[in-house]
Image 1 (cartoon, rainbow, N blue to C red):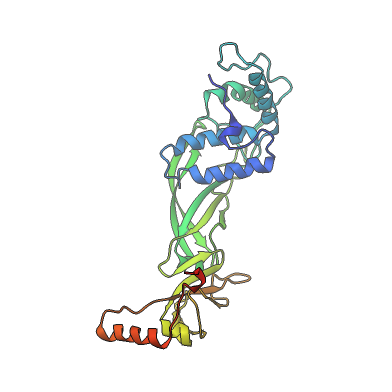
Image 2: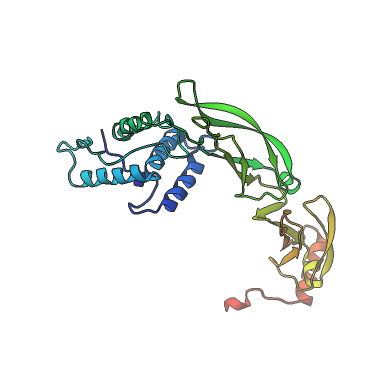
Length: 319
């Protein structure tokens, strides 16, 4: 049996803080959770991540694990394989934390079972186990219109639940989700009581859905703000103009393009982004579109423009 480096599994250094452990676990869980991951080994990686998190977020287990790591660093077993030294767990009392259940680690490795499993079971038998269910995380992709106006959607998730024997298994379930107006990418929607069931009469955990907004043909979302590329003609950019623009709410507004407008100039439509306190804005990024020179008249007009308004856009290059 090989020794497992739980710090390496979570991408952490030995002295990582509790907050760093928590952040590393959440980041990896979002990447490899079977509900959202496209990685071929997502299930196996998720088990390894859960196992490492189980140990490193528990002070007693982490202290005991660090002691074992020191034993391995000093040479461990002579044949190179790992075996816990006799009475290694004296002075430690392992137990399930507030967000853990007694059978959550049924799919964990042989290393975990040999090191913590038996000791943990002994501790559980010494007390009447009660614990709130574990929180779960998943992702939900919604349309921009749902973020603007709010909606109610049904989502299907693969989630881990416990069977009658207390063993974890994956099941598919459908949930109804209320999407509030103004929700933005990276925000979480909490579904109370939809996480893992509790133990000993304690309540179930919660399900947290990370919001992602599907790509839109016109608008790009950044936090509560929206961005849209607005094509204008060279004439409109040079002389200024009033142009009509569609808004995310479905209406149309007229905006002023100032004279001498350059490619990439940003115009702001206040409070036209995602609703909220404060609401976001709609930003228009000007993009000068050249008319095609596909007729004799168009080519002649370009020639006349070159004579009437000589202009060298590469003058600053010194060539």
